[in-house]
Image (cartoon, rainbow, N blue to C red; front, side):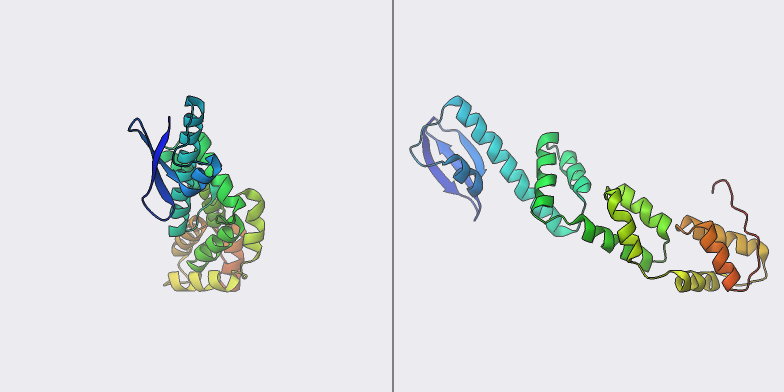
Length: 208
């Protein structure tokens, strides 16, 4: 098929028009890669390749747009693209490409998540759960958590703010269970209770 026209629809997007009346939505980068020009003749195999490259390029632009709204991991981007109906190979290509381009920075994202949840009073257990849920690579977890300030003062403050009667053993148990659900370990909770002069044997429940 012979290219009859190239119509620019936005700074980076084009419609490639053919003499038979068909069109392919494409991008400037795809057009450059395939050396598309008015009057050029493409055989069927070249047309399929042009369609594939154009679709991949358009999807990559969409992926960049998605990541511009908020930080995300490569896995989150992959899942979002798949949810939008993008095939697995193209979604994987976009996720890997954005990491290579530095647009997705999972180390920075992990540090940001750790600081966010720590600032909200959550412990390391909750933060690790968020890392897992969001697909942050495990080799980044420890460094992100080690960059956080010590949580002793924050945990002590949480205990004092939640306990209306420090002598109420039942209330102490409930507060301890609440802190455990927020991601603090039982050792951290026991140590905090001791620092707050609440000598209490906190029994770890099987589940909440």
